[in-house]
Length: 459
Figure 1 (spheres, rainbow, N blue to C red):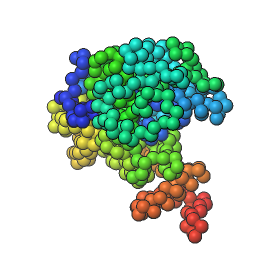
Figure 2 (tube, one colour; figure 1 turned 135 degrees about the horizontal axis):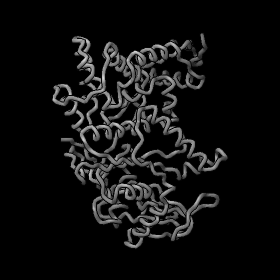
Figure 3 (cartoon, helix red, strand yellow; figure 1 turned 45 degrees about the vertical axis):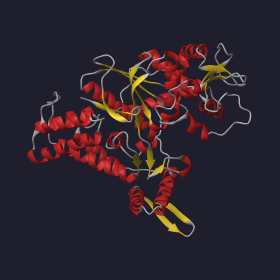
Figure 4 (cartoon, rainbow, N blue to C red; figure 1 turned 120 degrees about the vertical axis):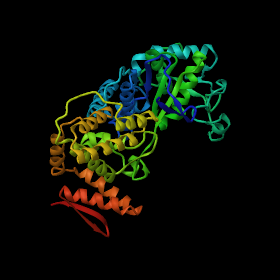
């Protein structure tokens, strides 16, 4: 039986869907004002893996992943670019879909945009105001009254007292309590707006997921997922809104994937270690990135480095090499097979992909020793469950060789890698620094270290 780590109870629990045979899953998607970065890629791949496994064990999955297409960052970026919000968001939605497809991520059942469901959000806010869980402030905004919802903090484990102790008191406070969060924002000059009972404005970020989740999955559903950074305050606020409006539980199982780090540091543009999916795809095949993400347990931190991507590349090569001498037909998995059973046990233990992938390597070893086409078929079939090993092995290995011989970095990428190498050396990670230098050398880039820093030239 499948067990899922439930962030709400901080423990693994047997998964029992509300409706037998059907799973209703909502995942917080992207805010579309820029290209997807590696953190977004992890969310996309992790919950694609979750959906694949739920379907593998015979469940019908209704999967909703929203798109936030209106917020402060989007408005600001559109102004900076001197373009309409629709043009901006449409462009980055297309880019997101391209990145997801490249990583082998299937489309969700529903992918609602926030701007399409403003009416649903207004209706929910009206309910909260009527129940006196929300109020219309004198600045035109509508706020949720946190202290009136007794369960606030149950997902994050934070008490109101602890939260208030860390709050700065606003000088000109419009909110009754510093912890109250916005449900509806009064329109500022030049901003897009919608009409509402509280005047022209637009929804706050948190209300959109409550409203869209209810629209597609009902006001009580099985699983809600997203990155660990959303646990508080976003998901905490979703619970308050939805349970406040309906007086019953909102979601049974909360799933959160871990943070992405770069060379053991937080990914950040200011540190020069911020990577978009598109930048990484210039250096590595998409399946290598997917394999790299799934090789770590979804709840653990994912540490990105070129060395780790190279390790993933070499590991995936070994799996494909085991398949290259075999003609394999697409047959059903024999779950009575000992290795298939171990794979199932791993996946049913909170989607333990590291253990599941270890089974793939055991199978590859058996294939190499026995030359068994039956074992090779099982390797490919189990790989398919994770969205792996579905390319023609000969084609994959030839593409890999060609890619290794045709690496071309832009000047911006070279400068970024030089900065990574400098940071690696400062932190004593000389192996990583050497790997970066070798990657550049293989691409015909010569580094020269001097008293004024590192310069580079092409061969």
